[in-house]
Amino acid sequence: MPYEYRKLSPKEREEIVEFRRQKGYPFHAPPHPFREEGTYLITAANFEHKDVMASPERRTSFQEILLGGFHEINAEIIGWVILPNHYHIIVTVETLNDVSNIVQLIHGRTSREWNLQEGLTGKRKVWYQFSDRMMRNEIQLSQTFNYIHFNPAKHGYVKDVHD
Image (cartoon, rainbow, N blue to C red):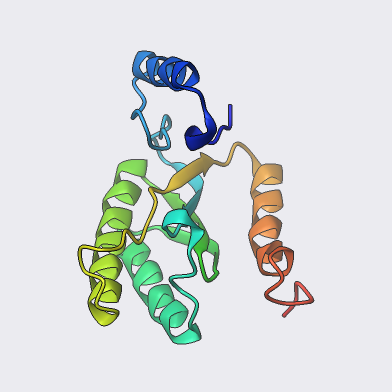
């Protein structure tokens, strides 16, 4: 059930935290219930959707770090898109644990680097935790592939999806 935590009443917050506790999910982070081998859509956004990756140079640098990290864990990279405030990557991996570890390293490295560059060390949170969705079949994979490639047009960064 999607919700905006900040807009909930104290009672609604308590109910959600209790539900997450019973399911074994983290209290205030996306759950990652599937851990096995498979193809996943991995999505992460900059904290509060700020355009931390606004410059093309930063996105290019992040692309190299992101793809390099996933190559390190022997992931098959199917598709990706990097926008000024979030990214999507579709990968086939042996376990989601590998994804958790490499995303943590990538986010830690880029947070430190970018905050140092901008003099914001200790003053700015760069990333929100990633979310994942396991692809159940080829149809869902195809739809997701199309979705991430349409994403720049959806957000108005390009006029045509082919750009």
